[in-house]
Image 1 (cartoon, rainbow, N blue to C red):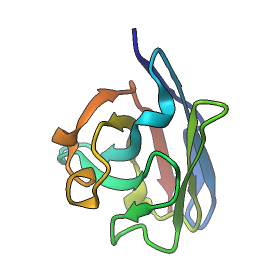
Image 2: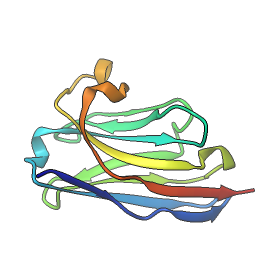
Image 3: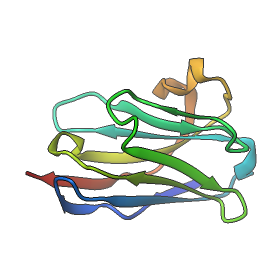
Image 4: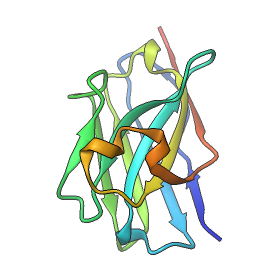
Length: 126
């Protein structure tokens, strides 16, 4: 059984940083592209970032480019989201996800992902 478990969320002041790890089990981690999505109250789930199987390609939503960095450690079956210069509008539940696809055409769409974590809450105060 596949499990994706996010951690590292919490309350942070605007301008601060958080690092979200997502530990994967039950799947051959290096055969999946990995993504991060977020969902704020009353809003649809939105794409944040994605990384290819071998970490040679990364993709970001315009809203987080230059502030967030996605990375992965295939030896540890873990994907990370480093979030810097956080803003109140970054407040959301952040979800880790796994996809069979490798193309950026697909990785920004939640329907391209087959496995999801339970999410971790990030709250940024002004």
